[in-house]
Amino acid sequence: MAANLDSAVARNLGRLIVLSDAGQRYLANLTKDVIELKPRRKLIDESRPCDHIFIVISGWLSEYRQLRDGGRQILNFRLPGEVTGVDCLLYKTALHSAAALTHCTVAQISREAFEDTQRDFPRLASAFLLSGLRDGAILQEWAVNLGRRPAFPRIAHLLLELERRLRNSGLGREASVPFPLKQQDIADCTGLTTPYVNRVLQQMRGMGLISISEDSLEIRNSDELANAAGFRPDYLHASPQTEWQTRFRPETSAPAAIAAM
Image 1: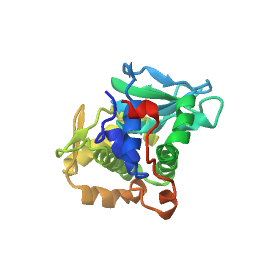
Image 2 (image 1 turned 90 degrees about the vertical axis):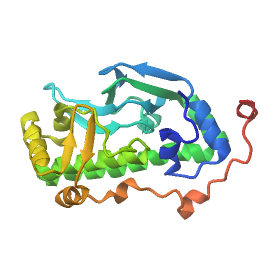
Image 3 (image 1 turned 30 degrees about the vertical axis):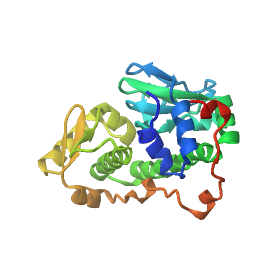
Image 4 (image 1 turned 90 degrees about the horizontal axis):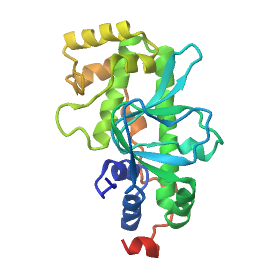
């Protein structure tokens, strides 16, 4: 279950910074040991210590805050190849919870392993940190969604973003993409009620914009849906070729432990 050189993990991190061959092999070794999570199983618990970064190898996770009245606000979804828990490097306790939406396999990277990565593979370590900046860009869009967009464009924006993130990870090679979200999940991240979400999805179906089932999503008219949502995907397309990123020295040789793999 490790990340091979063409995995969603390598593809996602490679979008943030160019990884050397040695760095990619190190990444594959770093993600070779995985844990399995059943649906609804917690990976990170809000306000409790967390000493790991996690990489989703397969399945979907949700990051969320649980409210005192029992409500839930979903802050982000974690798709295959994406990283969660980077903020745990900075804070003593987790700022939010993360739990499996589907059956998941997740690679866990300890704080000590991350420190080794910083020393031996600084490009790879920087890719983990840069993923946090990309998350900030996504969070900004979600804040605009919640604060200013009506229900129809709010849901349209979410569907378009998730579809693009899945395709960026190489998980949408056909017309449809995997989409295991329930209407309650969509409601919990858009601030709408489940019946309202149902009405909007039915409206989108009736307009021929989407086809959605229990486990897949097909965007049938992306231009019209993007126009309705005001969707501009540039915030998802971070470049690995900026002048600042190229200053990181390439790893010319792997540590002995990795070279012996």
